[in-house]
Length: 131
Image (cartoon, rainbow, N blue to C red; front, side, top):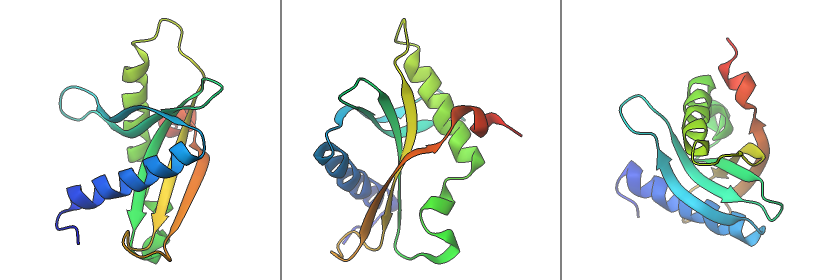
């Protein structure tokens, strides 16, 4: 159905976005990237009704092998997400409360038996930078 990893990623983000909007979150920005090479990217930046900014990493895996979608968000990926979030927050004179979540899609995107798991506070910015 999807021929490239970019198309699969876009489709997974669309599923995650729809899911989070159904939970009451509002989209702020999609695919925020820091300028230059070696930076980071945040798949979805959402806002909760209470004003909290939620930086969301979306991961999709067809099978649960090798730990599934959750296992693919390692320390290096977390650092890049935090880096991008810090860059995004520069536009705010007083940064709002923030959180780093993950939406994990398990199974094929065209298979209705697949699962969507929303992991709130999937990781902490200070832990991502710990060695």
